[in-house]
Length: 215
Ligand code: ADP
Ligand code: NI
Image (cartoon, rainbow, N blue to C red; front, side, top):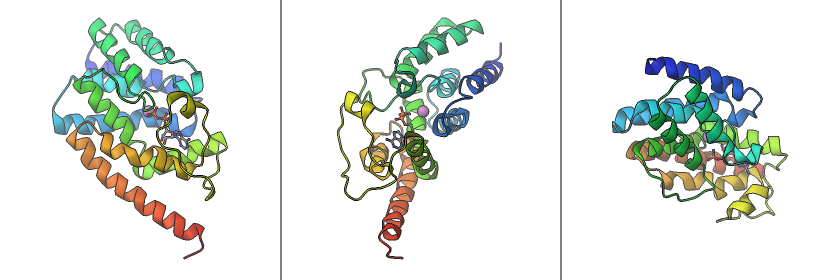
């Protein structure tokens, strides 16, 4: 099977798997991550594009925040890829990327060019205009307050704290979104992140002025 056919079949699978997901983690998130990965891949010229594309599309099919189980996503992705006869080394590499791509795991020992690209693409989709939209969408989904001047951001949360934590959406910018720029793996990722980061700072300053009734 051609790589493009494998990728198309995977899109159909992911669309079905994510049909009930909340708007910030839906099929379009997977497509945006694929497009960002492609942009980075074409500039950096590193890694195997099939692995990058499949991991981008499949990385969130069973997010632990919703499924409560860390191994479900990689297993589901692996069984699907085997069912369409993708080769074993590609399948295990994709599974490894999915296992390691999430933010809350913090630093991981797993390294590969393909992993670096997909992780940058996933993080880029959490910042900038899309990142702002996703944060408020997710915050609304969880019933968080948009902003509460009496609640301070909490930095350096441990995995189990992060899981049960429900702060405000504005605090989420300080707890995660503004930290992502300096966590980029590739130069291309960093350049895109810088512009998106600036946009978020502009948004926050506008938000606070309006919140306080200053304009
Ligand atoms: P990752 O995709 O790296 O695992 P998450 O699943 O935690 O990261 O986040 C996915 C999306 O949901 C991001 O856009 C993120 O900003 C948003 N999000 C996660 N937690 C919160 C929160 N507490 N408040 C608002 N948005 C959140
Ligand atoms: Ni994601």
